[in-house]
Image (tube, rainbow, N blue to C red):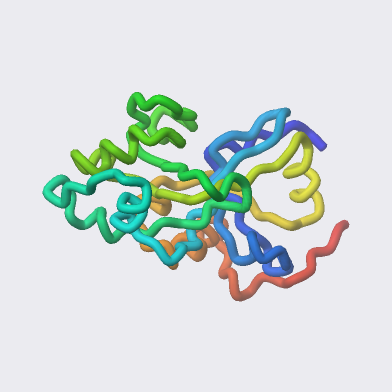
Length: 189
């Protein structure tokens, strides 16, 4: 398969995806290279909001900073490192452990970004997950060849402005596809 780079793209799980971790998932790919890929699921909230997460990790939430942020959902980011949090955010900023996806978006796994959110409400465009999704070298390419995923360049509006339940259908709309009309099995020419 030709070398592809899906960094800053969405992966859309095909209807036939029967893996319970990924069924009906929209994944934002933060890094993709010859070593593998790393992404987070951005449409599967867990039973926790930011205020509850901050309480669990002993980060005092100062509601003055941005009271609406307390109610933001925390998402299941994937089955890898489910004991760790990851924050997708815009702008990139300067945090202790940030992967700059592009000039505008970063993925941070260090506590300092959460402390800034709790104190100052910044960065205010965030998606917080527990765990991430990962693929080894060539694994994602193999899954793509098996028609497990559709891909489309990511749209920050979908990530940061839309409610989670609208993210998957909106990503599909970029492709001009209605998710309900996809067949469960794809053919090969």
